[in-house]
Length: 487
Image (cartoon, rainbow, N blue to C red; front, side, top):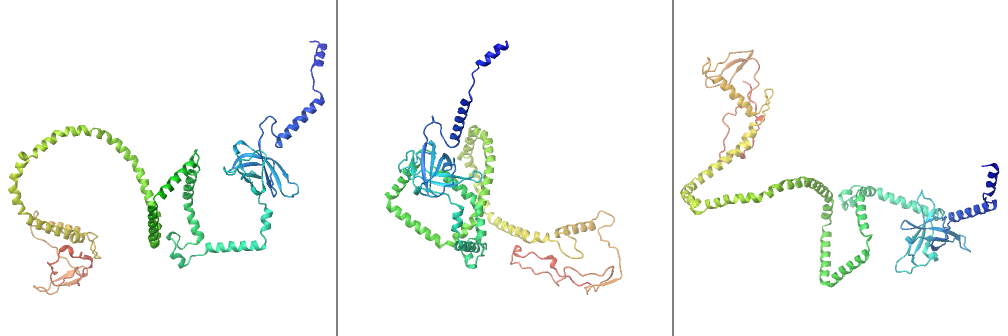
């Protein structure tokens, strides 16, 4: 393309003048300011306008949110002072369709937002369904509004007398909560909070708070009425209940009087009832542990039921296979079979009854002998005799068995020693002399001085009381036997 051609093309290209560009910029800035400061699109639907009169400074900014039950349903679009007042103001709000309808008894309260949100918001209560519905542009009077509580108002209300009374209240409350209980107070206290101060008892009560709050949350959730006609169903059911109660006034009167007697009986046993309630927590904990174990047993039980099903299914064929055996057993028990055998056994049974009485006496004596062994002989034979310095640490029956082995080794007759006992003579520097015997005293020499004899000779055999059963005697204390003097 030639330079002349290019020049002609550039001259024919349309351009925007400076005046037109300035006008477009002014319009764009005006629209931006309109939208920023709460203006709405001219082609959008007209919003629901609600005005509210406040007698105090609102401290609201545009656009502060309007909320119903914590949900945003609109925003504040205008706040202006009412002519003739220094603090009263008129707030204009735009309400979304989700916040409608609004009734004549609706209220508006200015509340503080969260710390991170800052500023305030309008808490709107749409009113009761029985009141008239407001139209767009209506105004809530000052009687239906309340402004925020300012810090200067709070400080101005806390004068010297109010502060002194508040301090006295706090000190009295602290003394009441921290004072130890007296003996009179402990007499009527529950055992779980006995000897605790009021503050400690309140802190102890907090461990029940999670369960109580959980139960309250469940109840509140159930009372929300999230499905249509829930409220009408509650009213209808309550009507039927009260109608049934009023239909039988005599029974209702008896119920109330019986309930009164029941409560009177419970009041008369107040101490026992309090002790019972105090014992409930351990019982509930034990029941909870038992329920846990029971729940753990369900899986093995289910597995056992699953494993036993094949056997149950085979139970029918097994019963069918047993039927011939049952028929044969029935025939065996009939009179021609087992009946004849019983007739032949009758004389033998009659002669056997004559031996039952002596056998009963024998069994009774055997039982007495067994009790003697279990209560006296066996406990005595299991005792370890304490005889220092000659204590062996063995039980009595073990020492008896060892002595039996020694006697058997000395008295056996299968070696060159023959049937006689041999003793090796020994001696020492200790001269030993026995008391007078039928053959006279005996003398000997001992390596060490004899300590004595245990048990000491009592001068005769122990007494025997045949009128008293053996098992009724106490177990002899072998370690308490007296020691005889040395020879």
